[in-house]
Length: 261
Length: 215
Image (cartoon, rainbow over all chains, first blue to last red; front, side, top):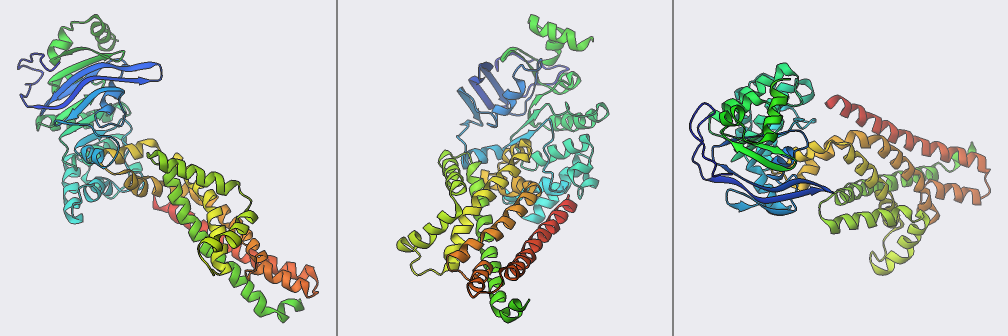
């Protein structure tokens, strides 16, 4: 849990920020399937938490509950001290502060790359068009796709699309960024360009929740690794400890399968 | 042949009458149809229920019955002294809106869910998501069925003629009553309808091609 002592070493220092995202006894069912079982998780400001686990373990669902793309049955989720409101304007306001990056990019297909990064700024934040465009171009340059600004998403490679998606989320100045398997739909040679952008974000102190299968990223960028299986958090540890010396059998089994194939 | 030349002003008025009621009720049907489609996919249960009821009632009622209601019941309650044009537009527009709604809703379901999820993750409201992200992408799918619906509306407008509104069918009935050969009257009436329906399909083809390029 949040009390897990995290020592400063290779995996990355744990920032001592205040709790930003707090999940308390969260439960969710998909029909008969109990996908989230009494999940308690606290993410502190500036912390990078990587969620790993076998498929079907509930990690994507967990990520999606944080901005209420999935509703929960019982328990509470609070962001920056405020519990998630019901569907409506209140929730929309809160979602604007939570960046989300999807496995399938989900860039707006009918808008150019630039318009994708501007839309939230102008329509939700009510930023002036000129200011929004300036910021969008800066962000696109930062993620390395500035030259593609006038193109449509379908004209970009997967890696470029995902970097645009990250820029689109960053344009809202989010308090926390959620990544739901951001590299799972990418060709292998494009994974690194996306991970590099994420590494950079992590170094800059962005609070991040990352659901991923990229163990290298987990090792190098995470402050904490959360291991999930069958809807439960089985183990939480600082990355070196988790990868070199997992405590639970479930984690040992999982790691043995993915690390030596 | 003579009947057209002899009664050219009548045919012209009939043609313009059909055109006018087609345009006005098509506009009404499009606006209402999109709005009700929005209701039907909204997260608010009462709105969804209203949308479903709207479609169920209007789509399953015979159009002639709707005209009867529009011409004999509606003026008793509101729109006292409304012209046949207004009442006919209401009946046709409301009826067709239920079909437009379903075509639009079908289009909405073809837009990947992730598009709406991404919009809402940015903090856009449901209405913003629908208007700025989902509907623009649904349009391309909706155009072909919409074209058929509006053409059907054009032909349905003949029922307004039976209720005393001056349009093509009304004119052909008038001339037939005067004893002219029905075949010629039908031929000219049919050609006039074809002018309108071909224009509609041409217009929609144009829109479809324009949207195809835009991406």
